[in-house]
Image 1 (spheres, rainbow, N blue to C red):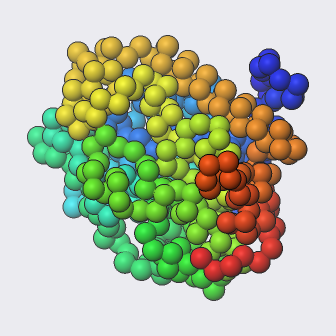
Image 2 (image 1 turned 135 degrees about the vertical axis):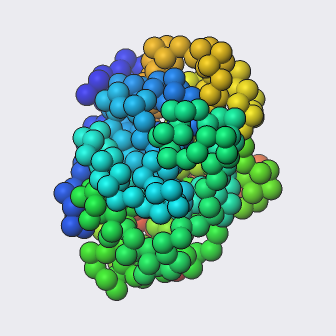
Amino acid sequence: PKTFTNPTTLDEQVGTGYRRIIGGRGTPTVVMDKFMYISGMSYGALSERAITALNIGARGAGVWHNTGEGGLSDAHLHGGGLISQIGTAKYGIRNDDGSLNEELLAQVAEHDEVKMFELKLAQGAKPGKGGILPAAKITQAISEIRKVPMGQDAISPPRFAEFGDVAGLFDFLDRLRSITNKPTGLKMVIGNADEIVAIASAMAAEPGRGPDFITIDGGEGGSGAAPLVLASYSGLPVRQALTVAHRALMNAGVRDDVALFASGKLATPAEVGIALALGADAVGTARGAMLALGCIQSLRCHLNTCPTGIATQDESLERVLDIQSASERVERYFTELMAEVEMLARSCGHDDPTQLVPDDVLLQIGPGRYQPLGDVVPVKIASGSRSSEEAPAP
């Protein structure tokens, strides 16, 4: 582990003691040895240079890199471990009619860099809407990678055609695992607690089935192209959503059987630490990675005119982004972020950030008035194989 010399008496070594085993539902397990990863952003939405810099930076920091739903490209294959995301359009692994092409999926799974697969049911910035990659941003390379025609907007449907209930979801997850032989989970936004309760209850009723991991994306999840009304008002904020999911899994007795990830505007040490205290096994950030690349939040992501060369396919604009310096910033951001989260954990008396509990966090409830988070979230949370007192229903 890399040792840092920040001005503190605490011993800081990134990743000390962290080890999360994921999988086992008919596939080999994988070991996640960092509690951070780069959340999903697609090639197409981002430029080739941006994706390349992200993956090189991920490799340097030892964190995993979620591909986003845009498919696997050469830009992703620079040594950083990958979570390969599958969206409703099944870009890169689809037939002409949008159905799943099992042969193409198997080819993606053959890459050693791909550690596991994530089925994206929704994203925080625009849950229930799907997505659009404008025709102006679809180059010949992106057309070939996504398996979509040139000259047309690439549209992700709001839902998967393959299933419409929890039983169908579990069948589809089993199908994906049988093809890839790798752990497979899902990403969701919680709008109604009944959704995660239904998933947890089904896992309890059918041991060994269901997702290997669940990513909870909060309504704060970002996209410069998201409709303002959805980004502002749709989907629970990540802290509330994470609490609901954690409790539902605990109450069903399946919390130890599934990894729980959190994403949604979690880019600072305190935000990451609170998410870990609320039950997350790992935290993904896209916003922090984007800012490290050089994003200035000009909100032109869908216009192909990003002035920093990040969210554009215009070659003249893309050249602004220097891959080497951008990847170094990404690596430094994640390395320092993890070190500072560890510093916070050690200041609370823990050996590892995932040992953080709600009582380590104080909420300001008024001028000069504070309340332990544990009074609001009465759940005792441990890390890894999580043990807890019985939690109230969400």
